[in-house]
Length: 253
Ligand SMILES: Cc1cc2nc3c(=O)[nH]c(=O)nc-3n(C[C@H](O)[C@H](O)[C@H](O)COP(=O)(O)O)c2cc1C
Image 1: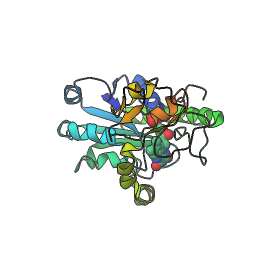
Image 2: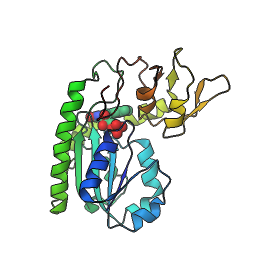
Image 3: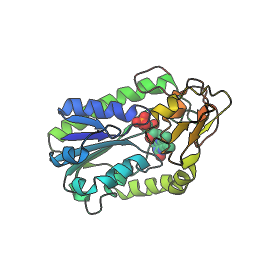
Image 4: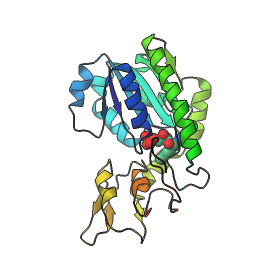
């Protein structure tokens, strides 16, 4: 088995690494420079891990999937999604990218992790949530590994109720995603350090000659820039200054 993941702010990376360690599998971020076609073709089973955005697969992961579709369609698939609360059919959303491959999915599961949208008042970033969700997620990964090893089939997100719940989440999300491809903003406290430019997974950001950050209409809404900016100057989608940033499942915010 080989494991591929995308993680904006560390949750999915944490799960993918933990899962692959337990399963003795190689693990790659899709941001790495690797021969993914070769890596997919040489294994029987491919596990994909991604965060759910509006019950959808993030655009960066969709583009990766499209690129390696032919190879992926011949594999047994394990799908692990991280989410803040619920996504209904967030895992099935990946299977839909590979038409006719539903039966190739041998395991699909949702794992609740801390929220990373750090500037939305309804979901504040708290230490309590980080500790609680990480502990529950650890237990869930143990269970997933046990079940995968014993060849148990589980397809979370495949029921009619999950589909309905997913629809309630993603209605309007494709339009929102499109609208916010260039919604990055840096407020007047930006010092032009270029950290967001360096870390953007989409190469969406560039530092101009005046030390201002410009964008190329390619934001995947991962919230990495918002959470790493040393001045809390960066925002996407929601333009409220974060009170607390999300530093990943293992670090205090
Ligand atoms: C744009 C965006 C949309 C999101 N939509 C959902 C959602 O529909 N349901 C949910 O439970 N969590 C949602 N989340 C929360 C993330 O899925 C969750 O925090 C995830 O674990 C982040 O993973 P990462 O740290 O690997 O990027 C969303 C986050 C972002 C940035």
